[in-house]
Image (cartoon, rainbow, N blue to C red; front, side, top):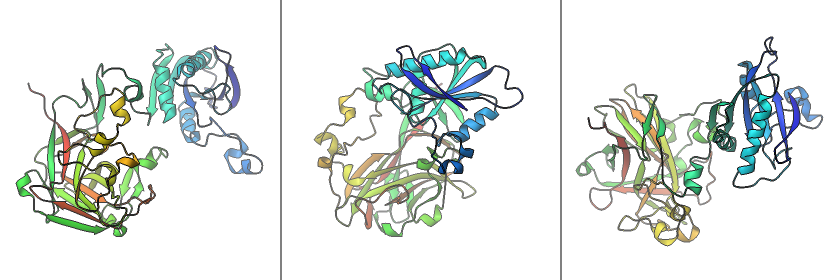
Length: 422
């Protein structure tokens, strides 16, 4: 690995690291993978600590393993500090016009090198992924691929868009592992199907008249964290695929449906409604929910999850969000393309509503595209903490969940993709 500066069009010096393969074919021109980071492209430890890492050489504490894989596959790698970060000069400015131009200058530099075959791929995680998207939007002819991981989702549409969606939306469906295309979001031919929480038999039922009314009270401290690699860990330690385990030992409050009589494709944002009370002050009611499937072999398969401090998500008698009435969120102020069925909450302290008594709480889970196979059973798993990832600012000791077929109907609403009409 070698380090140097590249001078951009406006005279700013951008720091880069260049990695080249060391195999016998390294003399032949090759494609290059560019990473643009604000998290320090590499670090060099002081003596004697440098003796403990990478044989004393500078290294990327986030990406070394990735770079090794890329080099092993025959690619050159360029890692750059974006302007105003790491060893690069300049100032971070928003919007990212200058940063975007810097990336074009670096791509131009790559294509002029004797080791380059003129083909460049873009890669990165989090902010780096967003930077890759900004670069690919320049339509530079040398850019042949872009692989963003965990980018800021739809930054333009959520933050700065003056209008509406245009063009097609591609999404990947887990379960059948296929790409699909939609002309809008939620996709056309998507309808919501409700699964009601039946208390006495802990069932998920599709007919509200089948609810067995009652309540379920549980001690949060008796619930256990899930093991394995969580969705939070997987966004950083991406060599370890997301995989929860310890479902049965977690002591969740679990509701289970009858087996599906045909495959069911879920596309969009599940919405959970709970009639919930938190027994101890300050009556915040932290809720962590997992949607899973139970296969014919009794394996538990993760679908999606979500969490909410229930005091920030109560609903008034008409079903409207109290927080929406009290204080606008940025989504009320900035044009966007929401799913109109998903409630929004400000999370302002002034909008907080404690839930000492049974209160309707509604919130969206993480959006998902997943095809559940025939004979699988749907599950909703509820717990009151995730100490592995979230500090209990307002520890909840006891929670009470209530449901009946009339006034207090707890439910999971799933967006189901139906077959389009012929």
